[in-house]
Image (cartoon, rainbow, N blue to C red; front, top):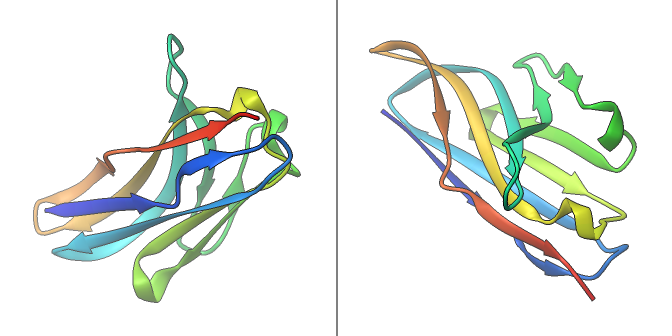
Amino acid sequence: QVQLVESGGGLVQPGGSLRLSCAASGSIFNINRMGWYRQAPGKQRELVATISSGGSTNYPDSLKGRFTISRDNAKNTVYLQMNSLKPEDTAVYYCNANANTILGRADYWGQGTQVTVSS
């Protein structure tokens, strides 16, 4: 199958920056779309950013300009650069990958990494 391992979360002050990483491993033929989602306490999981295998990106309007998604296809890794962080960015951030394996095409999720923005 496919395993996604996130790293880079932590505690940061308002206005600070963090860079999340997510590495995919397993019996992967190829990875299509990769992305980041987040879930704050008491709220539904929401889209943060996605990136296609060709590098096309998608963000909700509320995050454009502060967050940047990128990927290294050779390493099956996706990154999320988060700048000018706000307390409302506090959430568990989940990595997602749409990948082709011997079992077919499916969505896979990481275990999540906590991001806390607080002074």
